[in-house]
Image (tube, rainbow, N blue to C red):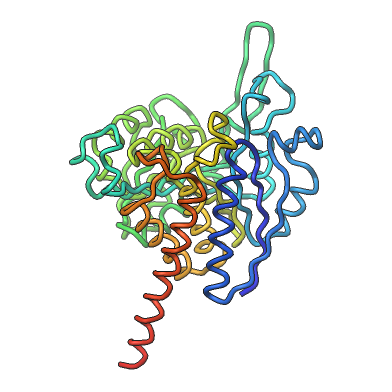
Length: 365
C-alpha cells in the first residue's frame, strides 16, 4: 500500500527518537512491499525559533493532508517561561484540536525482564496490561482562562457529545480485550464529573457484554500502584488522564518505553511517545527510542490497518527488551542508534519467521 506520513520531530530528543521510528517504518515498508513517503515539518520550540509560531500554517496543512502524523516531543528550558504568550505546548494542543483527535490511547504493559526497574514489588506487576483512553480535546486545557493580579481561573467544560464519543471508543476497545471498563472521575465534587458519570452509565446500557465500574481519581491514583493488574481499559477526562498515565508509566520502569495514539473519527491519527523532550540528554545519542518505535507500530495498526506489520515491530521490541541492548534509562549503556539497529534486525527475523509459518500453512492447506 501507499501511505504519506508527516513527521514532527520537535524539540530535545524528539528528532533522535523520531528518526529511529522512521527507520523502522522504512524497513517495514521495504520488507512487506509498501510505499511510505515522509514529510518533515516544524512544531514546538523549533517552530517558534524559525517562524515565531508553535504550529506554522505549513505544518498544519501538511498534517491535515497526511495519512498519519508521527511526533517526537515539544518544549525545553529555552521556551519554559509559563508567562510567555507563545509556548511550544500550544502547538501540540492546537494540532490535536485541528485534527479532531479526541481519544488518546496509551497502552501499558510491564515487561518481565524490566520489572526490577519498577518501584513496585514484582508480584504486583504480574499480568499488568492496561489501556488508558484519555479524552484529548476538552476540559481545563481548552476552557476559558482569566488572570488578574491576584486571581486566576481555568474553566473545565465538557459536553455530552465530547464525553460520549471517547467513552464509546473505550467500550469498543474493551470488547477486543477483557471486556472491562473503569471510568475515572471526581463526581463527588465536580459538576463536569457528574455529567461524565451519568453519560458513562447511559452508554454502558448499549454494551451489556462489558463490565463497567466508576472510580474517583484520587483513589485511582492509589489503586494504580497497589492493584494495577485488576484494570483493563481505563477511560477518563483530559487532565486526569494526563496525570494518571504519567504515574502509571513508572510501573513499566521508564517513560521512554511507552507509546501513544491520538485518534478521531477517521483513519488519520497522531502518534507520539509519551515522554517529554528530555533536554538534559538531547543531542547525546542516548535517548530510548522504544516509545517512538512502538508509536510507529500503533500508526501501522490504527491508521494504515497493517496489523501484521504492527505485530512484527512489537515482537521485535519484545525481543530487544528481553535480550538487549538497553539504553541507560532501563539499566544498559547502549545508544539510540544501537537499539534502533537491534530492533531493525529483530523485525527482519520475525518477518522471516512469519513467512515460513504462512508458507507451511499454505502447503498443508
